[in-house]
Image (cartoon, rainbow, N blue to C red):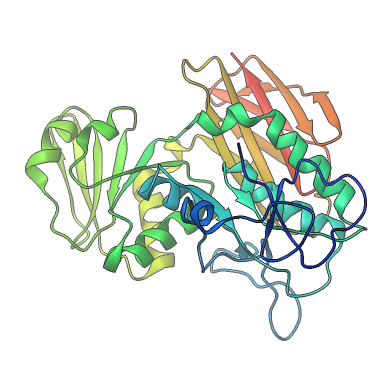
Length: 349
């Protein structure tokens, strides 16, 4: 059973709290997560409340790309799931201020979109919409087993001295809408379905392991002097940016990939992150969109998907709307209506 915890102390609030089924911390009237159950999940200490980061002087903060800088946890969830697939991930973050209901929905939506859970902070005003969001994701739990769609694998052990650089690489690639998979050093079999891989580790690259894959047509991106060379049908690209220069390193990986390898692109959606997945066999896919600004998007947001899916349906917590894909650049472009904090584009071949 999936543990869906409520943060509470004292007597529980009145009303239907399902599907929440346990308490995180003290309380009465509902089972409390035991020490054994807490050991069965990963609770990262560096998770953030999902939002657009705000400058201390007021106004939204932006990164070097000009896009709003967001406090996002999707990359962190994926990294923890990769490091330990035997334990689930639970985000325990409290809001640092009173928020509109959309802010509480975003917290739950971000965690559950990536297959994690979140400790819910209950208020009478926000609970009805949060409850609807949780039930939505439980009804679409099959997505949690679908594979990310990507042309890139990020290779690292994602631990020790490599954890910060590799994690920030994942974070910034997500902001660039670059789809990626994760692979351990030396696991060449994990690269079978991607055309490129980035070695994000301070350890020496075991080139002899990767040369057969490169010569078969793969592109291996490593830190070096800024050179590149052909190897059979593939290529080894050295990027001069050190992995500790997070912005430059992620930009360098994207530059080495080129936009021709993009699997999804968003236009006029600066505060959004996208998570693109497909079911085994590839007959269905989904692009989940998370809006960290917490308000409705503009009228001219659109998405391009590299694969020419035949049908697309916009799914939100309130229902479904058929979309009208237009064939372009080998894939499809889809104009989107104004969106709230979360939406999913369900795709069929």
